Image (tube, rainbow, N blue to C red; front, side, top):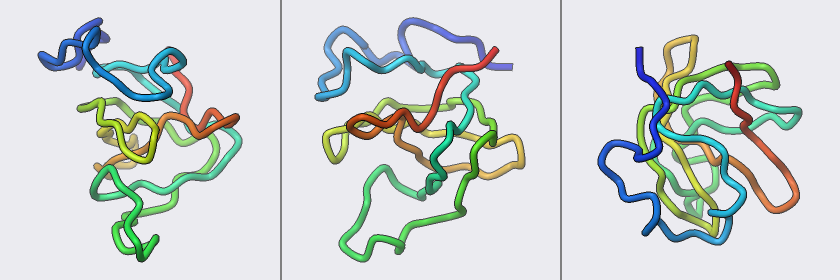
Length: 106
């Protein structure tokens, strides 16, 4: 079972740069839950021009997952690679401006 760490998979988090860095709460090994906004699990940490081209599945409020990789900064936000409790793997964004999409859980 992955354990939360301050340095996700060898990434120097102190040098990580993204506009939302000061607000992020997750790390590799963290458990997370989708908050009140449904969100897309994507195959890559990007929203393509054809916005639904890389969607694997829609995640619903209450869905839980483990952070397995990242962080990656795209579209001015932090994305994490995850494995959902239902067995899907992909990328999700932690938050959008004024919206927390994923929150840590014990």
